[in-house]
Each structure stands twice: as C-alpha cells, then as structure tokens.
Length: 404
Image 1 (cartoon, rainbow, N blue to C red):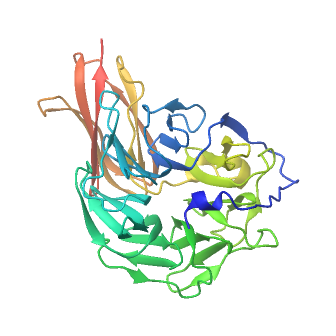
Image 2: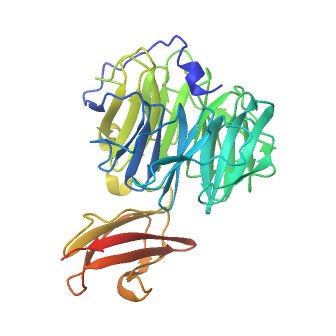
C-alpha cells in the first residue's frame, strides 16, 4: 500500500520524555519524500525544494507541475521526480528548460520508486493502471524512452546494495534482482509482507512494514527488529542508514538504532505529535518530514551526534558522489567535495573546454568518507572548466566557472 493511503490512518504517537536535545524546524512544507545526491537534499510536497546546507534552508526547484511525488533520482545534471499521477516521471535539468514530462514508453504512470543502476534509471510501478499490471521499467540517463523489464513485482520501494537491487512490495514481501529483469522472493522469516521502505547498512538489509515494525535480513532470513518500539508494532514509513546507525520514521515518531537494529530509542522531544513520514541523512544532520495532511507538518533537523554520539567523520557515505564546487563562480579558489563509500585510488582533475588537463588535485588512494579539496586557479584565465572524479568504476564530471 502506498504511503499516501496510510496517511489517513489513525496513529498513536508515543513521545519520549527523557530526551533533552531539541529538533529545529527549517520549513513548514508538507513532505512526501526526500532525495539526496551528494550535498544536495531534495524535498517534495506542495512543490519541490532543494537544500544545499544540510537541511537548514530551502529554495524552490522550478515550478513543479506534477502531483504526489514518491521518489527522486539524480543522474549527472538531470533530476528526476517519480509521481503518483498521469504523467509518471518528470525531469529537471536547469531553469531554462524547467520541469518536463519524461514518460515516453511508460505504460504505467503510478511510480512508486526510482533507482539508478550505473547510468540507467529504473522505475518501480504499482498496478493495475489503465490495464497495466505494474512492474519495473528502465530508461537511459535522460529518460527519453522507457522499456519494460518485468511485470512483477508490484514495487513499493527500491534499495541498492552493491550490485543487487531489492524491491519492497505491496503484499508480496521483498524480492531481489541483479538486473531488474528476473526477481526472486526472499521472504524467509518475514511475517509482515506489506513493505513501505528498505535501507541497507553494512551486511544488513532493513525492511519497514505496515503494522509490523522493522525486520532485518542477515543474508539468510528475516528477523523482527523491534526492541524499544512501542507496545504495538508501528508502521514504518521511511528508513535511512549511516554506518551502524539506522533511523526510522514511524507512526509514533522518530526512532534511532546505533547497533544495526538490535534495539531502538525514541528521539521525539520537541517534534509535533504526528507521524514521521520521511527521514534522510544530510551531512551531520538527520532531516525528517512530519505530519499528514490536516496535521501540523514541516521539515525538522537535528545533529546525528546528539542522538548517537557518533562524530561526523565516523559516518560513512553509502554511495559515490561529487558535489558542485563552492563557491561557483569563484576567484581564485574554490572547494570541491566528494564522498567515497570505500577506500580506493582516486584521481580528481580539472580540464579546459578543449579537453586538456590543467590541474591534478588528487591522484592517490583515499579512505572511505567525505573529502574536501581546495582548487587554487590563480594561474588560469577566466572561463569555464570541467572537474572530473574517477574512483574505481565511478566517473563523474561537473562544470566550474572562474571569473577574474
């Protein structure tokens, strides 16, 4: 069952009276989902907003014409929004083009989740929709044309771990695939099969269920992971993982596990007494979207260290990413940040528009974590340059502008 159906359910919120730290509200907008890409955090609900400062401030991303947004994905300079509506997927590249429909070939427009596999975009859909049974579709990096990969599963959410793709379903539990073509059920020990969210942390996979709390997959079977939750098993709308820390947005607030799901602690002091629909890790902060339509809503931020005691340097990224340099345009120096989920050899170079390498900023092995590199371009003339990160098979480039 999609999240929007669940918003109408009655929920009991049990707030912790023992927490001393406070949440800070940064927006009053109603949030249906978050999407993170490097330092960029996107929020949907009554439009689409972007935060580049870890959820502190927000700015609108164009004039979004779509309906209920279920998920985001980013490939290069393209931002995609999957919607629960007639137009399916929207693409945003820059302010000159705005939001455009990118659903050619999609015979099902009930988009429940988006995922990026290499440079391909996957869309999980739910059926039936105008005779279409649902399933998984694939497109290239611009989503100009979609093709069907499978008519099963009826996807509610995606999660990636290594080369494997996991899909939560609306009543069929969890299934896995290596390509999106063929799917295998993996429901041993799973006693609640309506899955609202999935998250990967190390060797563990976590599933948030409707009315059954959290389950943890150890590679062989699922085990209920509900120690510390209320006396009833909550509906878990959203999960986020960072290292051994797992964060759950539920119908009874925010819960945090610092031991890979073995136990949970409520962290709800100063939050509104409403469900937490979305959670996301952004830099040193946990960002949450609270409330249903008709409730008090908004985006709230809190340092992860207040809830876990873990320093930012110990919170490892879960994917490769390279951020837009800041400031940009710049004169004469700027900072480039990139994230590595594991240690490996890295080359970060700057090229001019003729393809000539004008500077090598990094050419060595770097450990897993968040890295920042200063680029001093005092020796270069004004103009547009390209910086390129290569880390294993991950390669990505972005533009920077030097103005003197």
